[in-house]
Image (tube, rainbow, N blue to C red; front, side):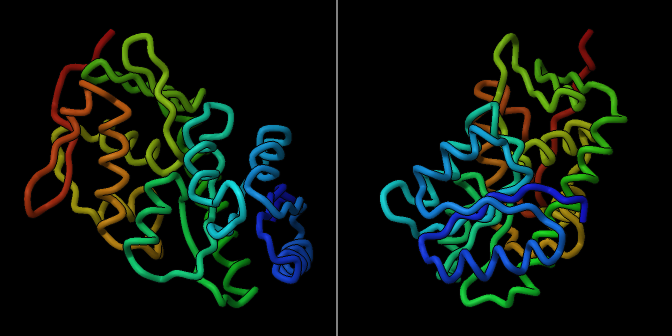
Length: 235
């Protein structure tokens, strides 16, 4: 590991201590808080490399923390691993829709948690490395600047989560090509990404809403998946 700083959020002190102990043994730096309010203020203050976030929190819950951080330009790039006691697809999809990038269900093995965090961070480094060497994309009035990790429509900056940015960038780099949900997952996350295909629908819906009128170019191909409509690059 590279000594990344992780913000750990859980209202149970015993779980915080367990996560902190295991992560610091792996070389991570950790900061722990016990409420959604503290999670928000700390995230904006230190801009951690990743957040491990329990969804069931007193006051501002984990879902709302996800929504706020994923919509703010300062923190939308931070990957969030949600920790949930619920394993239903609907709850997991709700968390992903709120802005989380991955999940783990309670009870969990500390070794599995460390492995999942490592996987998320490796994907993040890979995406950053790919983005840093990639050229700007411009299609249908949508501009993607990988160096700045920025998407604009006209003069408006669009705030996307890490996963939304990766999906949009992938589809915009391959206009006209139709990709299945599994192909999209594999392209932006890796073959071992443990979510349902339904989560891709949630992410695409979120991207369309944020793109406004330009969202119509992100097309659904019924029975197959999604594509970005072909169009000329813009100067």
